[in-house]
Image (tube, rainbow, N blue to C red; front, side, top):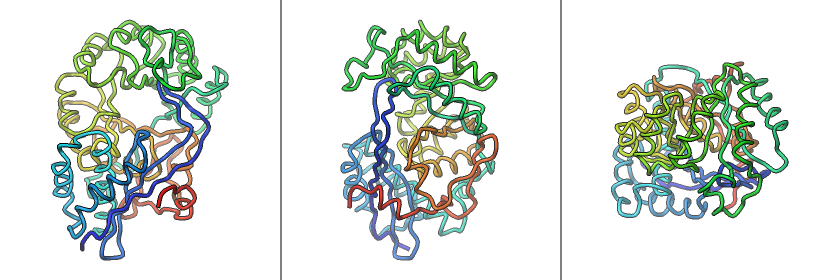
Length: 390
């Protein structure tokens, strides 16, 4: 079997505005990757974009990277990963290039599962058939105050979630806040109001775990100053509190605030970079994104690095149903998986793309698909509906 084409499928849909500490999203987008072969089999993956132009991501997938794979054996996944990485080293290494490689890699694993007639989790060495999750939401939005936030979290609990993550840090009253540089500063709150949001959510969660995410908008001094109050209010995990480039700052936070578990970093990429952070004691819980950090091939290595140092892994996942399925299979194969992210914002690209939605039990443990490959079936009419580039 040989690869005949690698194609990018760009999807986009409008949504009500939601904001984290820095950015505001008025639309959701995804770049799916289809690896075609000279048989009837193909693989599907997703390259996470972090808002990068889909035209750029599609070009990377199809022209810069995918064109090199025509005629290659799709089962030689490690060889293909290294070929793409080393041939783009000078202009790549991180960012959109590695994101594009990630999407191709996921598609190859999906294809390998179909060839072997096995789920991807089984190919990786599954150790569970369901994966715990937490509800990911709590964004800022126009007209969204404490009553609306409470109702949102109540809905999570009604679904069966026990743990939840909310955004914090969208502050203009905090000295040095990078929000002042962002084009959209709407829905900003004071630091004190953030504390009230945390208090309200923790009251609802009770013994459930509360996670907060600053989207790297704080600096180490801010975390050290505000961290004790976060812990007093019941926060257990703080996600990506500062930019990962400040390795010394991350390590200091972990060392001086042992009551908070530092989780990160969704924007970091590559096993070597995660190893540097782990060995510097900059992370308590490791959080790569399979569609960004290097695909299943590289994130599996990141998971094993975390395991070798006694750390848990909790996959970041904020894309379409394809990315969620890939994350689910990988999480099921890692014995140190704590729980994975399950986004609860309205997102048609997660909710509508599959002919049969992914399943979960009453406590929001997601069931690992048992069909071959990623075990999902795309609704191609929905892809046509949301497709924006040909």
